[in-house]
Length: 312
Ligand code: NAP
Image (cartoon, rainbow, N blue to C red):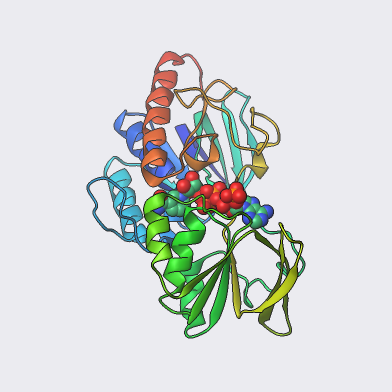
């Protein structure tokens, strides 16, 4: 078991974590980023972004590589592939344990992001990897000339449905209401896409198949009518839930589990900040995650400077 001491330990290496890392290290405090996976976070799986200022079009992976190089430039130490087992956010110093190491820190910046929500229907878990996928960019190419269904009506569902039309012969977008939640510009593009067919006011009740998925059972929520559509794949995109299992009630969270912060990204515990998708924020974008990271890190640096008497 390795032992490390840092002024700040950042949990999560996505856009919020990298940005926090850059600002903290540039603010001359010793800084580490720990991530359960390789670094890069959710945008690493985005095919393309066109709304990060200064980048008219850039691959999600490429943008995250630039974030990482920038954090490296200021000397952030990186610990990828480390699963957080326990955290003590209230103690002085704060302690983070992974399978491989123990980290002591004066401040912690939580940037562990969020993950896809499940439909919770019969067949969903059973067919993961055999027709059920939560990542169109990862698995879309397997559906060349096949028929797939995307579930949801937000930006993710609509963008990923459009992406899947590059491969699939037909993409159904099944949404529980009769209007989309996605941004208008994204909706306009989707309505022009001839391979996309919208199934309104409907919910998926079961994902069916034998070896692989071969259909979804749906129900119209207005008429109650049930039907079955033949599909080879199902991509649920019904929103996200925060990655906070390790927190164990130590800091205030909202009813959906997102961490509550003030405008400085401070949580209910002194010296603990939360940034990006993991906190209760009105907008979850790369730019807002990066902005959160900057604010949280600047206040973490101030906290370290003010608490010089705290001996780690
Ligand atoms: P979201 O905006 O929360 O949309 C979730 C969608 O799933 C909604 O349409 C919702 O229906 C539907 N839904 C929720 N629970 C459901 C259930 N149990 N069964 C069936 N449908 C269900 O989530 P998201 O699309 O994953 O986006 C998350 C955040 O990332 C958003 O802030 C989004 O703007 C952002 N994002 C932005 C971009 C971009 O700007 N390029 C791309 C991707 C994501 P209702 O509409 O009826 O509530």
